Length: 538
Ligand code: AMP
Image (cartoon, rainbow, N blue to C red; front, top):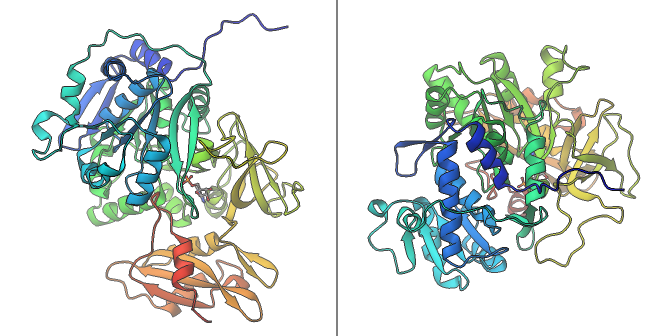
C-alpha cells in the first residue's frame, strides 16, 4: 500500500521559488569579474534565472541537453546554473584549470551545445574553439561594454543575450530523477569521468548540507563559498543557502587573502568554506596586517586534509570554529563532517584538535564502511584501516557514458581512500590507496607526515612519497617547499617531526623544491612527483 502524500518532485528550481517567496529581500553580493561589487536579492535571482531558462528555450535547448559554464562563483554563474536546470537541461560546470586537451575531451564527450564563460577564461575557450564541433554559441558572462572587440562570430555578451527574454516563463516539470548537473572528475589516470547529478540527489544533498552538524545555515547567516561551483557544486552551498534564506557572498575571481578578508569584513560573513590552501593565504594576510575575523563564526575546510596548525590557529587565535569535511565529486560531494557531538563536546586543547583533524562523521544520507582487501568489514575501533566504501542517494552509481561498473556487487562505491573509523563514528583518512607507503609490511600514512611537516615554521607545503628500498620495500621521502624568506633546514624539519609521528614513519630523506605540482582541483599531484623522483635512490 502506498502512502497518501502529494507527488511533489524534488526539483532544484523549487529551491529558488522558496527563497524568492520567503526571503525575497535577502541579498546575494558578488565581487564581479569586471571589478565592482554587485548586489541583488533572492527575488532578483529567481527572476533572472527564469529569463535564462526562457532565453535557452528560445535557442532551442531542450530537456537533457548539456549547457556548459566556465566561471567563477558569481551572481551570473548562479542564475545560469538555475536557469539551465530549471529548463530540464544539464548544467555542465567546467574546471578552467584543466589542460586544454582535457577540456576538449570533456566538452566533446558531454556534447555541450552552449557555453557560458567568464571574461577571465575567454582566452582558454578561444584557443580550443575550433575543436568543439557541438558548441553552437559562446556567451560571455559580461555586458556589451566589456566584451573584447576582437571576439569572433558566435560569441555574445550575456547581458545582451539575456535582454531577448522576459521572465514570463514557467519552470519545466519532470521526474525528480532527471539529470540536472554534470561535473567531470579528473582522475590521475585515464580520461576525466562525468559525474551526473539528478534533481533529486541535488535537493536531498542540499538538505543534508543544512543539518546542524554540517553547514547549519539559517536565515541569519551570510555564507561565502570560496570553493568553486566547478569543484563539486561549491559543496552544495548554492543549494543550501537559498533553501535556508542565508545571504550568499560570492568571491568572483578574488581568491587572495586580502580580497577574501575584505568580503568577510564588509558583508559580515558568518560561515565560509574552502580548501586548506585558501585558508593558508588568509592566515598569512591576517599575520601581515594584524586583521581580525570578528564576524566569522565557523569555516568548513576540506578537499584535502586540514593541517593541525590551521585548526589551532583559527580556533585558538581567531575564535572561529573549524569543521573539517571530507568528500568527493562522486558524492555530490559531502561525505563526512567533523563537528563535535555530545560525547566529544567537552574535549579541550590537544584532544579537541586531535578530534578535529579527523575527517569526521557521516551525516544522514551517507553510509560508510571500511573493508580489508578481501572486502570484509573492519571494526569501528579507530585503528583497523582499509578501503573506504560509501553509499547513499547522492552518490554516483555510474559515470556518464561509461561502460565501467563502479559499484561493488552489493552496491557500495569504493572511494579510493584508505581510512579507519572509531567507535563514535569519526572517520580518519590515512591516504589515497595509490599514495600509501608500504614499509616492511606496515603502512605509513603520507597524509599524517605531510600534515605534521606543514606545521614546521618556515615550511609552506610538503608532500611525502614512497621510494623503493632494498630492505623495507618502500621508505618515505619528504619533498618540501620553504616559505618565502625562510632558510629552514633538513635538520630543523626532522627535529620538528620528532615526537609528532611514529619513529619508523620518519622520512629517510628531505628534498627542498621551489614548488609542488598540483591538479586542477588544487591537490598535490603525487603521480607527477613519483615520476619526477622515479630514479631517486635512498
Ligand atoms: P575531488 O573529487 O576532486 O573532490 O577529490 C576527492 C578526494 O579528495 C577524496 O577522495 C580524498 O582523497 C580527497 N579529500 C577530500 N577531502 C579530504 C580531507 N578532508 N582530507 C583528506 N583528503 C581529502
